[in-house]
Length: 204
Image (cartoon, rainbow, N blue to C red; front, side, top):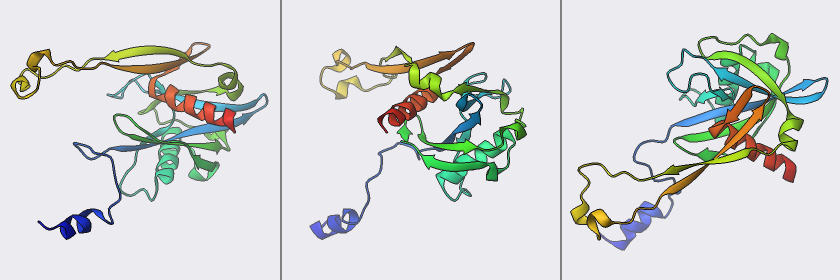
């Protein structure tokens, strides 16, 4: 192979994340609602009918589909489907910082103009509730930790690596934020996105 071939392969290429499998993409919306006491954030409780994370608290959203024109339109579509609101009532939508976890998560913040029209899709949503934005501005999350320890499979080829079974693996510590508002506990990925949103808002 000649060097010119390398240049042609990489010279105009844009870098992307190395993955064993195609990265799944999700878009979510942090819906803001105007109430008499100020702005509130809307959350939903996942239906017990769902296979993944039933009963967990999250923001509206879901997987970006091939027919979605943009990730923003995916977030609006999913919010409309889950809350039963017209897409036109979701306004002033802006992107937040995205994150790569088990999938690529693209959050957006927007305003829900007619919250009284909400009719949740009961197959996906058990209930919705709101929390004053001021609560999150004034209340930092509690941080707890999960230690992730590598566990090689039984057929891992230790004989091919220096140190064999005595190879020193490094644990990873995962920070898990928790917000508790009245009887609701917001934690995990939802809390991480929320925490980033609040930190950005404070800096602005």
